[in-house]
Amino acid sequence: MELDVIVFEGGDRRFAIELSYVQEVFSLGYVTPVPLAPPPIRGATNLRGRMLPVISIHPLFGLPDPTTVLLGATALLVHSGQTSAAIPVERVIDVLSVDKGRYEEGGQGTGPLVPGSFRGAAGSTPLLDMDAVLRSVERACGRANESIRQRSEVH
Image (cartoon, rainbow, N blue to C red; front, side, top):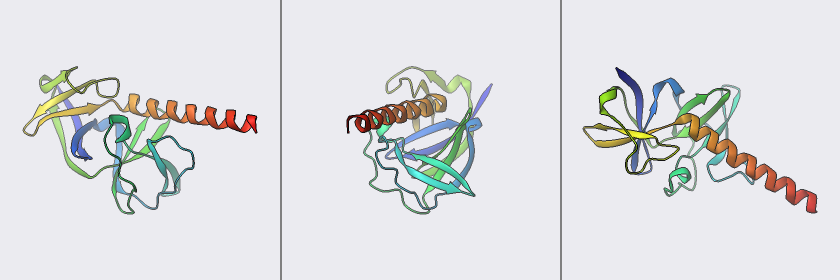
């Protein structure tokens, strides 16, 4: 049995996402900053009339976050349920089918956002759980909204 994935660079690390979560690879247009957004949210972008949050995976994994998202940067349009988002990446490395026998659950660097990894020629590549990644960002946004609401009630 095989698992179809897209492999990309995020910071100085490789990651993979199941291809079923990826709608397309595209070049980012202008990213509008969102004031008071939690760290994973870099802003919002317009993709053919559809506004999308731009999510950086860097803060989710304790990686240094680029200070800006550049116009024309490569991004993945991902979706899970009713949620869609743009994830900027340094570059797409490959789209491939991975034998499930090469997939390892748990291990070093795994957690709720990375339940496991697969072995390949370039070593071990963490497989992101996009459902968990997008839920994590939604929770961060909910906490930020609650904090803003509480501050506005005080004043």
